[in-house]
Structure formats: C-alpha cells, structure tokens
Image (cartoon, rainbow, N blue to C red; front, top):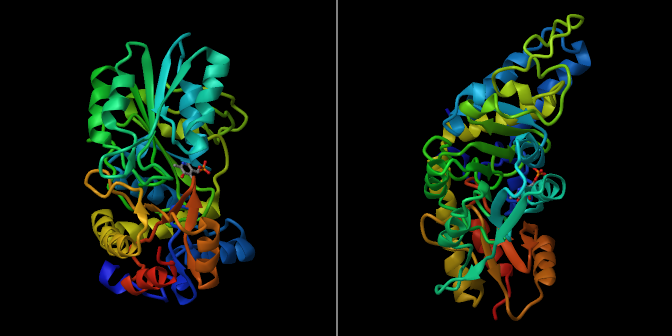
Amino acid sequence: MLDAATLIGNRDMFPVLAHWAFFNHAGVAPLPRIATDQLRRYANQAQMQGYLNSSWYADIESLRKLCASLINAHRDEIAFIKNTSEGISIVAGGIDWQWGDLIVTTAVEYPANIYPWLEVVRSRGARLEMVPEQTMPDGSRQVPIEAILAAAADPRCRVVTLSHVEYASGQRHDLARIGAFCRERKIIFCVDAIQSVGVVPVDVQAMNIDYLSADGHKWMLGPEGAGIFYCRRELVEHTRPLMIGWMNVINPQSYGHYDYTLKSNAGRFECGTYNVPGLLGLLGALTLIDQVTVPLIYARVQQLLDHLVEGLTKKGYEIVSPREEPMRSGILSFKSHGHSHDQIVLKCREANIEIAKREGRLRAAPHFYNTEAQIDQLLSVLPFH
Ligand SMILES: Cc1ncc(COP(=O)(O)O)c(C=O)c1O
C-alpha cells in the first residue's frame, strides 16, 4: 500500500525530486517511477514478444474501472481518448443542435474548451456566451457563479461547458451547484476536468455532470496523449461518436461481417487501436493516486499552497487565485508588480525550480509529493518588492 507519508519527498518513487523543485503539474507532470515502470514493462514485452503473452488489454480494462471509481462513474461510462480536446469535440460534434442554441462558458477557458464550440457556432448556427472574469473585493480573480447561472438562465441555453479549475487563475467552479441548476433545466453540462482529476475530488453523480474530459498528463501524473472521457449512461446512445472506425461497433472482431451497430456503452467513442503504452503508464500513475486517495492529496497540496501564500504575501506579491473554499485548487497564480515575470521564471529555472507563466501571471502548481523545503527554495529565489 502506498501512503502519502512515505511518498512525500521520496526520490525513488519520484525521481524528478533529485534535480528539480517542480511546480508545474498544471502544465505537464514528470512521471513517477510507478508509471515509467509500466512504460518499461511495455517496451520490454513489445520488444521481446510483441503482444504475445501480454496482459495489455486486460490492464486497459482495469484502468477503465479505476478511472470510473476515481470520478464515481460506471466503467460503461468511460472511454479512452487522446486528449481533452478530443473529448470536448465529441460532445460538440455529437449533439443534435438547433439553430440559435446557446452555449455558455467563461471568457478565460483554455482554448481546448473554446474552439470546438466556435466550430459549432460556425457550422450549426449556435451562439456562444463567454462570461468574463472579475476582480473580487478580496483581490482574487473569479468568474462569479451568479454570472454563469444568469447566462445559463437564457431559455435557449443548451450547454454549459466549464473547466472545473481555470488554468490561469486556479479558480475552481462549484460544479455541484452549477450541475444541479443545469439538470433541473435539462441543460447539458460538459466539464473539462484536466486541471482537477487527481488533485481535487470529482464526483460526476453528485455534480450532475453529463460529459467530462481529461487528459492524464497533469494531476493524474500519466504520460501525455492518454486521457479519459465520461459520458453519463443515459446520454451514451444519444451521442454520436466523432470518429468512426472498426472499434465503435458491437462486434469489432467480426472483421468480415460488417454490422454498423454502435456499442451501447462509452466504448462507442473509441474508434480504433488504443495508445497502449500511454494507457499502461496512466494505469501505473492512477494506481498510485488511488492508493494515496484524492482527498488526502488535496489536503496536502493546500498545505503546501498555504505555506507558499504566506511567503509570497510577506514578499509583496499579489495573489490572484481564490483561496477560499470551494474555489481553491492545485493552482496558485500570483503577480509581481516590480519584476519581469519572464526574468523570474528564468531565474527559477536556473535554480532548478520550475514554475509557469500564464496570461500575465506566475503559476505554481505543486503536487502532494513536493516538500515544504522546496517551497522555501522557491520563496528564497523570488525577489522582494
Ligand atoms: C483547462 C485545460 N484544458 C485542456 C488542456 C489541454 O488540452 P489537451 O488535453 O487537449 O491537450 C489544458 C492544458 O494546459 C488545460 O489547462
């Protein structure tokens, strides 16, 4: 059994700790050893015997179950995708749009949750309303939930589509409240959860989420290009797959007996051969996340971020991310008013500390295995105002 106490600062399990204070898990996470062990296992088996005697496909089905339990779904509601963009595109392309349907989102989404909808606007006559971010009385930047709900109250609103956690502010939306609002009005609720799954508890049932997409390479600690897509059971048969190949159908291995009947579970969204190494790596990483447990990971990351906020405030930095529940996340965005952000990122990198710069803000995104000492290292490199 893996537990947080033995994993924090553990260089054997997290080899990146040997050289880096890595705080960009909201970008692309370094792989833990348990994930690279799976990749090595794949490489060795593939090299020595190809698929013969491998358990790859059984392992992928175990992963499906694990992904389902991570977000409180059923395995029949999970499909594997190559990235978040693909999942959101399945939703955008799979709905029977009516001319004038309204799509509500925010004006600060990552583009993966904007362009698929702009394509719907272009080709299907839908409208897109993007609710802007505001500066709140406590100085944090947020898209107020009241403004999102007011936009979604339009009788033509068909879809609300949100990032669970906004990539540049770190704001976590109150999905339970928004989901309840949508379900009551039969509005489709679509969530980009790449910035939450693995670090923030997600419950698709309690949150009334209809569709969820998340690539595995951030907080889930998996390799790039292997992600998960959730489609609520009742919607599966009403959602047309985006791409069609040999695997979407009920009898994919009856090669010569063509029967274009789509699967009745989320497997209908998978069109062909899996990204086997990517999914095996993700299986390793999620086994670890599952054993440590997301609530514990969340609490630990908040501890690290509280420590960081305290130090940043003493040094005169402006905190952009909301720090109150239920809006906190794994992302802490902050600003310097006296120093160039580019210079700060560079100075950090020279000291083997990795943070990111997004939309005029600095962004720190530690995971549970980072240490307080590494946060202190970051604070010591950041200039005073
Ligand atoms: C909110 C959000 N959505 C999506 C992505 C990435 O999308 P994809 O998985 O399609 O590469 C990112 C990456 O930074 C992100 O922050």
